[in-house]
Amino acid sequence: MGTKLERISQLSRENPDMVFTSIGHLINKELLKECHEEMDGKKAVGIDGVTKEEYGRKLDENLENLVMRLKKKAYRPQPARRVEIPKDNGKTRPLSIYCYEDKLVQGALKKILEAVFEPMFYEEMMGFRPGRNCHQAIRKLNQMIEGNKTSYVLDADIKGYFNHLDHEWIVRFIESRIKDPNIIRLVRRTLKAGVMEEYQYEATEEGCGQGALCSPITANVYMHYMLIWWYEERVKPLLRGYSGLVVYADDFVVCFQYKDDAEKFYEMLKRRMKHFGLSLEEEKSRLIEFGRFAEENRRRKGKGKPETFTFLGFTHYCSRSKNGKFRVKRKTSKKKFTKKCKEIHRKIKSMRIWELKDMIKRVNQILVGYFHYYGITDNSKSIARFRHEVEKSLFYWLNRRSQKRSYTWEDFRRMQQEYPLAPAKIYVSVYDS
Image (tube, rainbow, N blue to C red; front, side):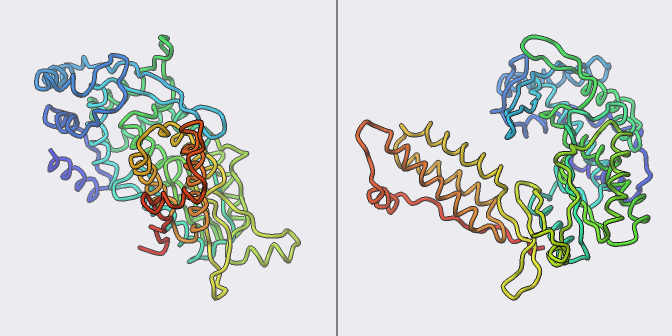
């Protein structure tokens, strides 16, 4: 099946105007079985309670039945189970948990959509794509600011992006490359499946459920047409100076050489988003003076230091290298730092009855995972602070294992010689290609 999808991807790459009219038959037993093998069996179950293990007991029979219903156009996805996930600001984010069989269909649909659309995406899109990650997005942003004539940065935040994607626009965007009615029917039925929350059914009139396997590629297709294609083909030719864009999921930053270009784009962007049923979070979207000349310009105007902006969990700020050259530096954002400290404090509390060696092993796994993301060029102080907070939390909860105080700091240091905490380490350079 991989060869067939690779062929579609090749055709899409070589023929940008090609429209695929007959690819629905690729969602067959072979592809669905492949999706089953890739599925994480530990994920939460949907409203039918069926697990991967249970579905797999009669896998061939179940898949043959599913394929037959797909061919007869009788397949209808069940409503998703909705749960609310707490956010940093005290609000919640809805997460949709789908039935296992629906996950298989979504997985197959995702593979087909990726084969067709992935070759046409611009380099500006970094999220939810093979071979791309957050650190590459930060490297791209770093190059946009340090290697070009950036003087202004628009840090934009879309209000409830995944929850407000217009279903008709999703279908129209997908139909620009795929005219197969079987694929379009599946897309529509997946979008309109609805959700169950506290035993109440709720229709889904907009948005694509966060938790759906095909949600990331659907969101990328929407972002491609709504923002990136428009920016590259329609906006940039109108600007008189340098401009650059980097997008990760629903978060994006745009750099400009001239303020009037930035202001023109900002107004055009708001109109563009309104046309597609979206809007900017005005309180979180800001146009700031930022770049190699920002410090001098703001000092001359009596405005103080250049402002900072946050992107992908890092606060980016203007600084200098040891030899005095302009540098963009970054540190863990205050919000993310506080959130992670609270999370690990609760985690260590829950582990306080564990054997010491098991407890330290798990804490080190968390620390190394944290350092692999936040251990980035110029962020040494922030990750060292986080390690120190973990150390303090560990000391606190080890001393709550009994009524008697277990450790002094001297004892704690001796214990660490036998069970050391992972060192704070920079794993990622923003200057690597």
